[in-house]
Amino acid sequence: MNEPSPNDGFYLSSEPRHIKKCPKCTTGQLVIRTNHDTGERFLGCNNFMSGNCKHTESLPLDVLLREQGAPTLPGLE
Image 1 (cartoon, rainbow, N blue to C red):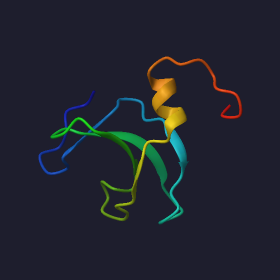
Image 2: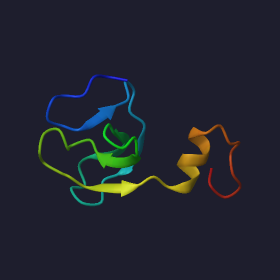
Image 3: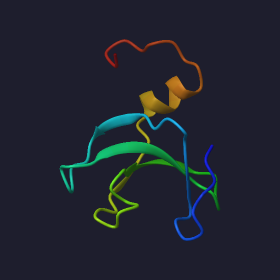
Image 4: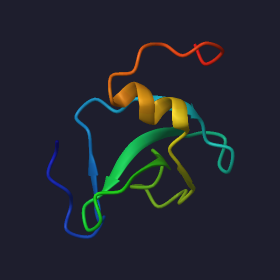
């Protein structure tokens, strides 16, 4: 993982996985982020660092399961 900037409060993976388009700003992509204080993972807009969008969402169940090595789930391909 990359080192967080002093003010962002989040770690970014070295290769962010774009999960879906941001519903708030419509120009960014939601990527998996980790809050370094709590370790909680969530989706956040990749426009966050530029200050243009602060939209976040909980990780969808299928993403959580796949991250833990679950096989492809029926209906969630």
